[in-house]
Image (cartoon, rainbow, N blue to C red; front, side, top):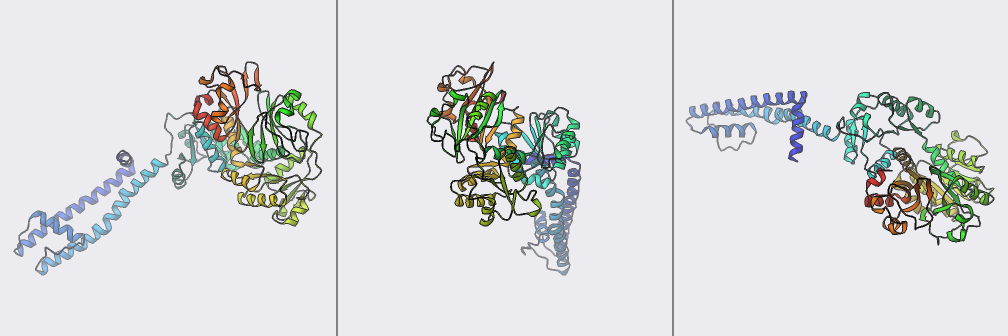
Amino acid sequence: MVKTLAAQLASVVRSRRGRRNLHVLGRFLLVLAMMITVYSVGFHLLMQWEGQQHTWITGFYWTLTVMSTLGFGDITFHTDTGRLFSILVLMSGMIFLLVLLPFTFIEFFYEPWITAQATARAPRQLPEDTHGHVLLTHNDAVSNALIRRLAQYKYGYALIVAEVEDALRLHDFGLNVVVGDLDDPETWARMRVESAALVASTASDVTNTNVAFTVRGLVKDLPIVTSASDEASVDILKLAGSSFVLRLEEMIGQSFARRTVGGDAMSHVIGQFDDLLIAEATAHRTPLVGKTLRESHLRENVGVTVVGVWERGHFEAARPETEIHDNTVLVLAGSKEHLFRYDELFCIYNMSTAPVVILGGGRVGRATARALARRDVDYRIVEILPERIRDPEKYVLGSAADLSVLEKAGIRETSAVIITPHDDDLNVYLTIYCRQLRPDIQILSRATHERNVATLHRAGADSVLSYASMGASAIMNLLQGNKILMVAEGLDLFEVRVPPRLAGKTIAESAIRERTGCSVVAIRTGNGIEVVSNPSAIFEEGQDIVLIATAEQEQVFLEIYGKAAGAES
């Protein structure tokens, strides 16, 4: 506390304005001291004239009690001259001590000191030795989710804010903020952009373009990630210098389409590690329903490995005794040839003629519709705003809370409902409503904020995709060099270096699943990535392993085996 106060005072003294303010305050205090001294001398002279004797300390005591209006009354004059002198001291004291002194103190000392405190909480530059950090430009759901992921992997970051008041407010929320204008090259120089690991801008398309252009003018090879709401902005952002442009609405729409059971039972690739493809496939209406993974013989017959299953929004790591149900979504790992053989076997199943119902015709709703159309899956969009209707044959005008509107869209016949509005409260309402209407239906819902994901699952959603998590995971994947793949909300595939303490042990001996909850999916060897199917496989020093886990399980792994495991990969 004392050191902090001393540092802030030193900051005030070092600034030009601070020195000027202290000089003014010093002159005022000097005038006040001279006034008190003159009044004390006058007190002695008048008291002697009246025949009273007092010490010099008593003179200063009387002067201060009168000037401060305390007026104890234990020492008084007996003549009118003395009383007139008392009135003069009283009036001047009221002006100097009760009016000018507080104003001068606040204006020339307290306010600069508060400003110095604010400057300490919201600096305008980063230390010279800062490196490997991530620079953010906008405080939104995506940035907040990314900040949590950066903390998990021990990356430094700074959120650039234009206004000091906003910076102080965000600082009080625990964010590492720096004050600066995004369109000023000097700001980025003070942010040590030349030694940064990545710049992520998730503001408006216009702001993102300015950020990319400004940063690229300073650093030629720095990864710059920007988001884009408008498809036309993608090319402009790339021309401005953006290395990667994220269209989160399209990403969510594609993910919804992959998870929809209303189309086919074919596998849909969601990511890859080199030649290893990760895909999802619905078991709805296939011969797999009712069997365990051991009984399915998928690895023996087609070569794919089931690394986990989704059941009503809950992920379970694959075990031989895991049973496949009608609503199960399989998470598969294998080569392109393996997935092709899987599709040959199951492409004839799960064909539905009833259209998928999409609630909301905004960007996410339209992106979902386009992705379903590419799969030749029919759909109907329920939209309350007439100006959003593109194709009257595919749209139903009205409120999604109106039963007649939902019935017109096909809620009674469809096998899946996709809820896409930007309002999480509305999405919870619609999820509960649709679940009551059709207890057997598949419900997929969007969440803008991560905190509402669990609420939507409790409301009855089978799968929830968070706008924030998807954006944060995509940026984190770019930062880590494509070492992290978001399988679904709260579930990731991530690649790490074999921790030294596990080298030479088998998967069974390592007890990774028992200790952390993470499951080993594959091991990278000299011949590429190989899917792990045998717990007797041995971890070798220098190898990389691919794990599947929830965010909490991933955090446990990093805490037990250290950041080095993630940093080396």
